[in-house]
Image (cartoon, rainbow over all chains, first blue to last red; front, side, top):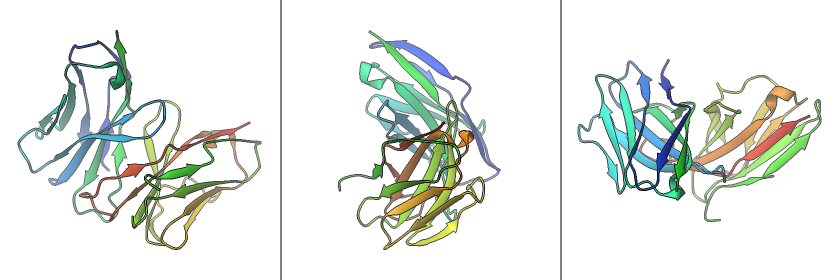
Length: 116
Length: 115
């Protein structure tokens, strides 16, 4: 069964600095998608960035980028120029490509604090 | 509506009572998912609907949990004879189609507290 592991329950970063959140996963599949979701206190899950496993190029969305290491099954999120609004819980998630249900498998999350 | 709507936002119930949680997906979204988020845990998949059918209900933790979807739209998650371990945030998500290429849109969840 696929699993997603986030080993950092909490992280802290100074405003305007850079922080990296770690995620590893386990799968026997070769085609899949990986995601980072942000959950602010409102509880709504917001998609931050998505990576297709068949793409070697790391995905980037403005200040958010990933370091995708397929062989190592690692998928870290880098937040540059951190802002107070980035404070939230961040979840890493996996979905199998071509699966029957598009069911996301989530890690346990990393709570990010941004210090002014 | 513009997004996925869930009601109630918060629910406190006594152990042993039944509760119903409602999800209004984005109009036109055929796929609907329920997840449970317990304190300190990630999101746990409960059930997936495609239209009104539930081809994957493998995450429902016990027969006290059931869900239905009507008219390819609104879904209701019912928990019978609630237990304290049922306390969690229940999140609903919808997507245009049930494939990995179709991003999930989440609601704000229902926080259930069983006393």
